[in-house]
Image 1 (spheres, rainbow over the protein chains, first blue to last red):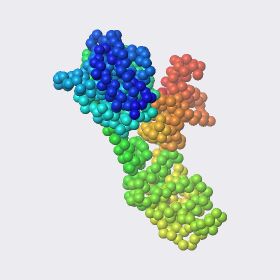
Image 2 (image 1 turned 180 degrees about the vertical axis):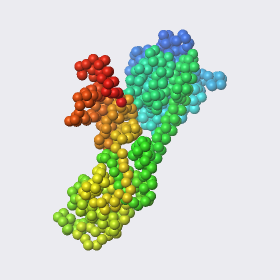
Image 3 (image 1 turned 45 degrees about the vertical axis):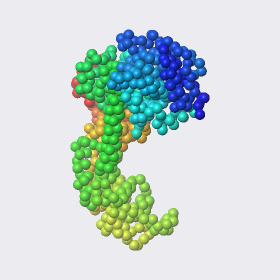
Image 4 (image 1 turned 180 degrees about the horizontal axis):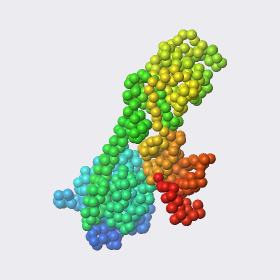
Length: 181
Length: 447
């Protein structure tokens, strides 16, 4: 049964294929049992671009998103196709702050395999769904989990994203239910 | 196992502090930030952070200087150095000083994750080590008797030697020196260690009660004796009986005990049937029984019976080099009991503890540390936390000369002002140069 206590918005930042957004939204609905809606697109915030690193600063984009209105959605996941970083890291696949309102998923680094080959679209979509669910987990106050296959396990590389399950471990599941109660 | 850690990020760049802060929050760690080395040291004084992420390049105090201070004052705190590509040499230097690891900014997310995994593993090993060490300390024979002074080394070497025989032992020492702990250690080392150890303070009860406690009584022999009761001399059966403050017992009780020790039989009050007993006697006293025997106030035959082997426990003022070790032991003990975290004592506070004569010996020191830990607001005990320790004023002798009186008064003022000459000169209403001259003349030096 879909919970009506929290509603989630998925917002494209820039030109993102509708099908990718739909896959992310559907996974949130199915895995977390939360009502999810795809929102109208926004431009990628240009001021988040770092000219030295030629990447987008995830923290600045999140700050910008948090200053915007997204209807009545409790949490919003932004999806973009730009290379993201946070100042201490070379890159991130996604970013969200513990208990925050907005998170991000970048498709940029999900479109290549570790060996440089290009995966088929369904693999990219599954990776995007995993990162989106993981970041949404942080927005819902879930912590990184030590269980290797749990959705909340930290993934530093693309192969770890592939190893990650689309499900929460038993403990994180209980914790999420508690949070949504 | 709880893998949550307390982490402090020390960096002058807000974006770095913020990024790391949010990253560690995702693991549920306790996270704090500091904008400079000075702020980090201030925060370390109040909270025992386990892990520090320190940027090398910071204005004021750089990361290397902070690392050196942390490793000196808080050696258990782990430090990870974060540095830019240009300062690899500094990172290598940091590793030599004692940094746990270093990361080059910006790092891959999995590099930080790997470092944290290694630290978590190291933390688990350290915690297992402390658990096993504590466990081992608990089962070692001299648990709780702390000291490394030659006087205590002598006691430690005697314990296993005397434990092997059944000879009566007299422990002599001032109140609070740990006589009962030594008695327990002897018992634990002896062949009787699996049998009871019973301790009775002879000075704490009236003679009639002590007699009843030791010898037992039959039903109805006195008011309140509603049923027969075995005495401790019988109950201890095979074990060790520790009679503290033996010098306090009456001559009549001395005769009764002497008979038990000679005949190895005890007759309870109101009974005519002696019961065979077998125990090892350890007595203790804070009085000079030799002198009392010479003066005829303590029975000589009883004295020699209980004093086959005498062990003298030195007072704390004669083994002041043990004070830091004892303080460390009591800090650990009371931090565990009170869940407060106090693990340091400033140099001045330690000097104060060493200067004081501790008439109540180790027990008084233990109480002082317990009180200071309970009332302390930081993890470091300072002189103010120990302000209740006041070395008693030495009474002026009636035969003191004016010169001695002057010296004694100047010393007292200096001590009260922590040997601050300017402050002391002000109180004495003389100038600093004069006070320096007088200190030289009287050979008064800061201890």
